[in-house]
Amino acid sequence: MNKKDKNEFTMIVTDALNDVMIPALESLETRLTDKLASKEDMEDIKMKVDSLDRKFDAQQNRLDRHGKQLEDYGERIQVLETTSL
Image 1 (cartoon, rainbow, N blue to C red):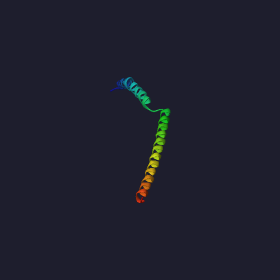
Image 2: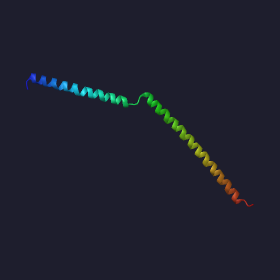
Image 3: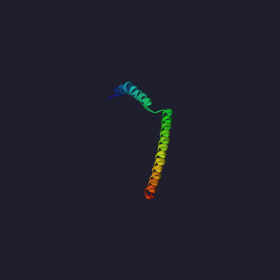
Image 4: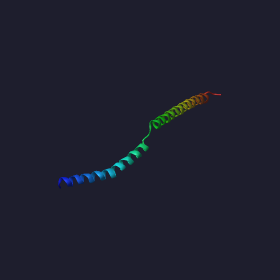
């Protein structure tokens, strides 16, 4: 290959890359930008997770309280069963 052929080959490859790769990369960038979560989306997700954590903690507290009540009732029943009438 002489210098003219190399330059021509380089131009063909460059044009082909510009025609094919640049639009493909722009399309990819658009798709990725659309799929990435924004800062507001992340804050919204954090708020929802915090809300779920609070609800879970409240439910756990209710379950603990009801469990304690059942234990107390069990103790009262045992006392009543052991006392003679």
